[in-house]
Image 1 (tube, rainbow, N blue to C red):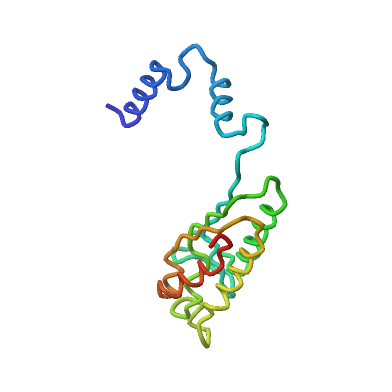
Image 2: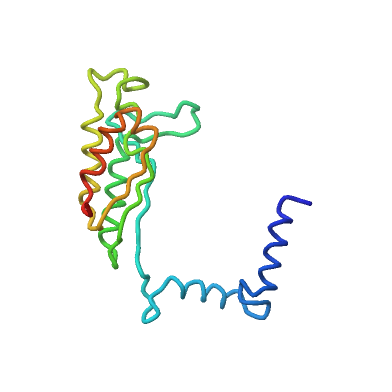
Amino acid sequence: DKPNQHFKHAENDMKKEGEYGGKDRSSSLQASNAKDRCLDRSSDKPLFRFGVIADVQYADIKNASNFDHTEYRFYRGALSNLKKAIDYWNEHEPEILFIAQMGDLIDGQNSGKYGEGLKMKEPHTDEAIGKVLAEFERSKCFSVHHTVGNHELMNFDRGTLLKLLFSHRKDV
């Protein structure tokens, strides 16, 4: 068997069993039915909206390549990108219900332990996390759900980090 063959067999079985609405229904009707399950049946408005953001990695340091020199990082620009995301979510109706922040709010270099951070007289962890969390505070949404990333753990111990991240929640 080829790797994708198992998927194709499962897909065909579901079509036979009516999981996709049967063979006699068009794909546009199937897409319409899926859309209907996510909408308020009395209108075309979504039941809810949420925002997702990951890898903000803010640091007040000059832009640079990553370790592998495969990406160029805009550390200072990360804060303005976060601001743009918050502004976007704040301007649209209906308001977003929550934000899922997927980790790495600030860059590990804020710790002063490597890279440009070695040039710092002292770590910039508190200042960096404060600026980033202030942007999340501007959000109109009910809550922000944080995932802890490795860059947070380069800057804070777990106890301090949990206090910082969850003392800003509006739903607690």
